[in-house]
Length: 344
Image (cartoon, rainbow, N blue to C red):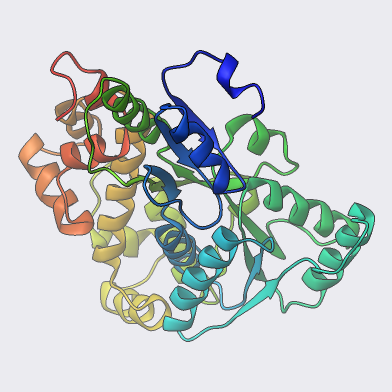
């Protein structure tokens, strides 16, 4: 900061701990966009995470896997606490509870071996099987290491879900860490566009650039279903394995050697939804993955997954997600920003 006057910059995207430092930039006429983990800074655009949506997505994903016991491993920070509140609310709405781990605030000097031991003891004391949301991928790795210390098997006794989907980091965990992906790249493009406008002397009414969660990238740390009914678990696995093709409820019932009516009854009792609803959800989840991880057109995705036309896939997708596939892609990726037509 003391050398700020020598930088000769026209604008900056900065990460600040103290809000006062933002005014140092503004006093020198340097427009800025702030990325800050604590309270937002007024008067400048802030890059913020949608922590409520992150917690909701984690809760819904782990509930869908049939777990009844849940944990949350976080840090003593504003964003971690926000994710915990949202996650816990989603779990409590389903009639379950969340056990939360937080570091000791008074631990000075900090000792990683001591904290690892505390996390290990916390996980050991949770009823099994248990699904744990970690506040981010770093914390997810901590939980995995703590489980190793306690000789707990992942994912059979403990399922771990992180946030941010740092692909290299997640793949290097042992076992690989499942994680919630966020549209950080799209937020980066939006931040650059806002900063460009500010550097050109234009005013902007943009006060928040929001980083949204997009989907769960499943890896080995979550590769299990905690379903008490073995036939329902088998049916769920069949649906997931065959989600790339159209399937009928009768095919699922046949795969588990059960009548359609009996399977319907046990599905509703165990999961609170029908077999047909689960088929639709699994298919749409696959569309989400293809929208965000490939550059295939909607028509190509429809063809790949056996839908008759783009209209059919759009109607089914909107019924589940509330928006069309194209609108979902524009919201969560940078494809629209990098197209010849430019941003819309």
